Amino acid sequence: RPYQVYRRRLGNNDPDEMLLEEKDELYWMGISKSLDGKYLFIEVSSKETSEIHFLDLTDPNANLQCVAPRRLKVLYDVEHRNGRWWIESNVGGLPDMALWAAPANAHCADEWQLVTDAAGVALFEGGEDRALSAITCFQDFVVMQGREGGLPRVWIAAMDGDSVQTFQQLLFDEDAYDAGVGTHYEYDTRKIAVAYDSLVTP
Image (cartoon, rainbow, N blue to C red):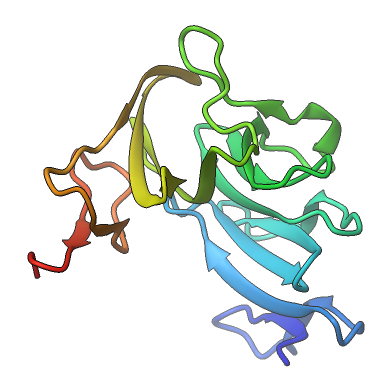
């Protein structure tokens, strides 16, 4: 299992620096980078519990920090946009993932707040009616994937600073289909790639 992450500084012969080691064999480790390129994320997770660490990539001397320490049977994942974490988590014993936001600080669990629309209604409150499975943050909008009414769904939140200006679901003509958001590499864009197919539409 992956259980260690090292940092290698290019251009010198210094030994690699171990950033993190996970000794509990229940937990696997993986790395990713925020789409805006500002943070490296290290996820340590089991089937029921997760913990995210982050490294500021704009500071070559930055130290690894933790978004929120692991809590038994609490899963969470993190993206970054405009100085804030966007977090999907089942914290509080929720049956599904809710959508939270907080300042992009370490140990910020007490600052998580549900993301709401312009009317103050939570976009994803972790209930069984609307399930959240992934979020992708762009400069001017946030894309969310999940399920509702038994079908995969894609929603787009247009942002005004840190506030949700509009929240819309992508609509398709067919009654039954599969749809999902593709991989993206550009943070400042006005377009997204969506994969779609059904029993009659390849």
